[in-house]
Length: 290
Image (cartoon, one colour):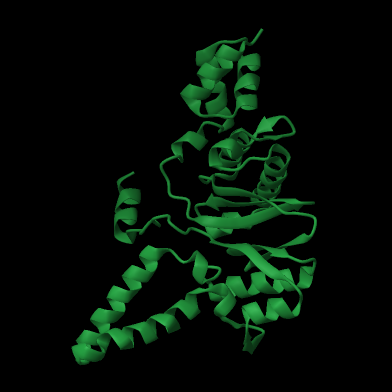
């Protein structure tokens, strides 16, 4: 009989998924050494060899069920794999698991279950099957009230995903806001949500810029304030010119639809990941040396 401790030891040694480890032990009558060999023969332990690779491609995704929603990013090493049907299926499975579990962050997400299998194990198994390192990150969960509406938009097959919560019940308006967010990448909702450090930094940059232009010190401060106000309009969602009608701001458009934006999120694939810089010459030399 295979014990939980045996499965745990095999997982720690190989990095293979829980169900694969259990099957390997059952196939080898609980012999740990033979189980490792069995996993290698099946190609399953290849997943652990890919752990050091950089996965900066993939997709951003969202899943919505009633008043609950979740946003997340699933990374792969290449854009080609991100279009693989098995990868697409994995992304959908992860979304279902996250919604069902109520996971609010990456750690909770990896423990979420899809048909009895942890998300972490789904990813390890997919890594072994597909042949590239796959990882999950930037998981966040959201809830809305009955008198609110979710908006969501995926651009370029998930290269960019935007999401918003609006007071009101106009789904079309919510989607329009998300399309705008995807296109214009605002940093803040409105002036009240701007980070004071951002204003301080922007003021210093604009001041130095004006001085470098040779402007008289006596009028620099006044110039900086004018330029700062223009800069803040460009980073605040409600003050940006609406992409579908530049004659009105996003805030004006939303108000005309009897709605109000409560929050928004924009994810782009690979943000914050240091992407690999391939050295073609070194790659060729390494291949020749084999």
